[in-house]
Length: 255
Image 1 (tube, rainbow, N blue to C red):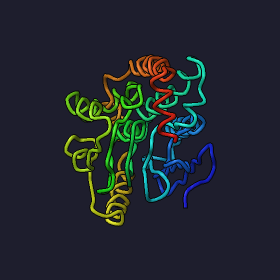
Image 2: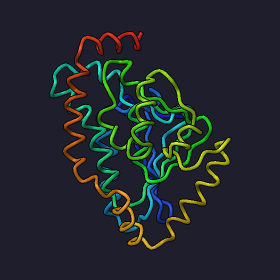
Image 3: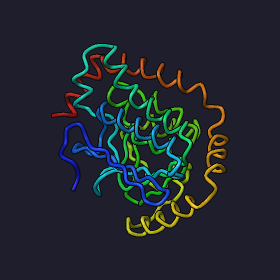
Image 4: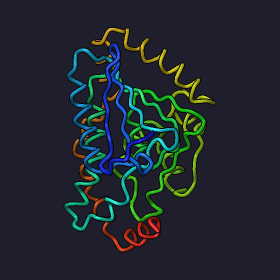
C-alpha cells in the first residue's frame, strides 16, 4: 500500500552496503517540490556515507514508477520565480545523482512519464520489468522536457530523444527503452526482476568502494556544466508553464 501523504514520502533503509531509497506519492508517485528537495538531500547525504557503496532508487506500489511533476502543484504556481523554483527541483535531483560518489541503480517497475524518465536516465544502471513503458508528454501540455533532456540524451542519443519527445502522447515499451540503453535489463515479471536485482546490487556493493567512486566520475565526465545548464533550463520551462496554453492543458488533464 502506498503513501496517502499529499507531500509524498521518502524512506531510506541501509542493508549491508546498499542504501534502499524509496519515494512515493498518492498521485502515481509524482513529485511535489518538497519531495524533490528531500530526495536531493538524501542522495547528497548518502554520497558522503562511508558505510554505503551502492544506492538503489525505487518507488512505492505496483503501478506507476513515477508520473513526473505534480500537476496540482504546477497549477498552483503563479509567478515566474515560483515556476522556475518548481522545475529546479528536478535539476537539483539530477545533479545530485550525477555528482553522487555512489553508483545508483534504478528499479523501474511500472509506467514512467516526464521527470520520471529523467530520474531513470540519471541512474547508472537500471532494472525494469515489462510494464515499464515510458513517455515524455511535456510538449502535449505546452512545455518541453528541457531540464531532463541532457540526462536522457546522454543515455539514448539525440535521435531517440527526438522520437520519444515529439511523439508526446505515445508510450514506448520497456524493450524500446532497453534497446536505446535507458534500461540495462528488462524482465517479464517483477519477481524475476527483483531476484536478479538483489543479486546484482549486493555483488556491486562487494567491489572496492574507491574503485566504484573513481569509475563513476569517469562515466559522468563532461557534465560539470550541468549545474548551470539544468537551472537555466528550469527557468525556460518555468516561463512556458505559465502560458495560457499550458494552463488550459493542465486544467483539461485535471478534469
